[in-house]
Image (tube, rainbow, N blue to C red; front, side):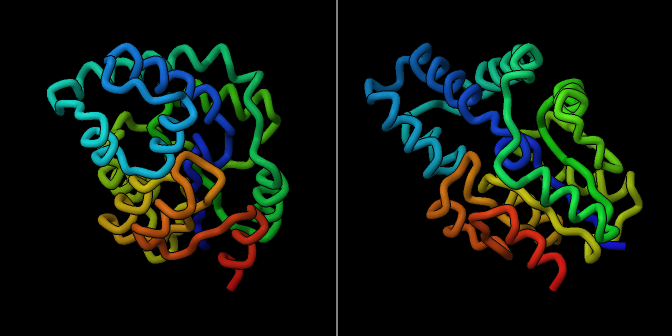
Length: 211
């Protein structure tokens, strides 16, 4: 049986307004640029994390501070879940995949408590498993841990995500990836990293996995 694993933030749940707000706040706290909010968000969407560090001249020594802010944001997000929407067409796509007999899962660096609450609030009980690891820069390791835990053959798995780091992780883990353009990184940025598939609409996922 084919298994389809989804990212959560920026792929299923439109957490982008919350994420961008927190990232803008962090950048302003660090006083690394005086660009407008719109331009900063555009840069965030068009670059990988290492490229952003270089763009804003942020030392890697600041990484523990940044990660701490990320984890704090995830904890704060718990109270924002009721205001967070599904991306258009995602519910219907998930339901159709389920009807067609695919096994569905989630792999995310967000907190499992957040994802569990979102699924309950949105009545989206369609997933066979949810796996979370706080590996923002090591998602390939999380992917390999998940494959082992669920006893999955990587040839029978396809991952669906919205970030450059998802593409990099899947290439390292030997897993096919469908990159979606409605999330964190924009289409031009995703294309630079050569995902196996690139889609603009959730309905396209059905065509790819059924071919």
